[in-house]
Length: 252
Image (cartoon, rainbow, N blue to C red):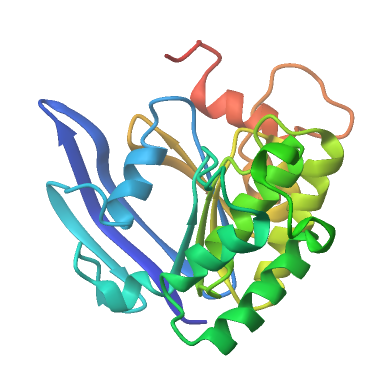
């Protein structure tokens, strides 16, 4: 299986504090990798370094076998990013929002039209093409945000907390959308605080704390690491594992 993302010995410091401390991992083609960790664990810093949005002190990052740099536009065209904050134009209807973001990468009008149609169908916004963002529910707005990030058919997709503050039905629909992206051949790096989402979606999970990987593996492999003191009839949940490995203290 081809390696899409390779991170080796990544270090990012703020003054004397290492936000990312000698981090190494890889992501295979067609994989959904879950990136978990408490606040301040280094998740966002790691993603920003991978995307070349942030300089790092040492280490090596390769995407599709090539070194990632701020001017690596041939690589960036193959990447889709959906941040936690919804980033769409309030004055543009759904279709035109997707058209704008897709047009940053796809210049041929006929190809772009086909891609937009595919994106709208994938996230289930067929009935809302003429709606403006303020007319959409929170769940539909999140799905528009996803459509804008994936309409150009990226091979690598970063999803940062895509289901935050949405109802269970919308969360389920978004999870199904993400599975479809994987089924269509995309590789996904997924950050979330919802343990049930990780169990449902991710092929493999990395847990970060204090800038280091403290555990990685499949859901079942991670559950074997849990040493919970409370007797659990059906075995530990992923939430048990997370708390066992990162501790229960509140994080800023």
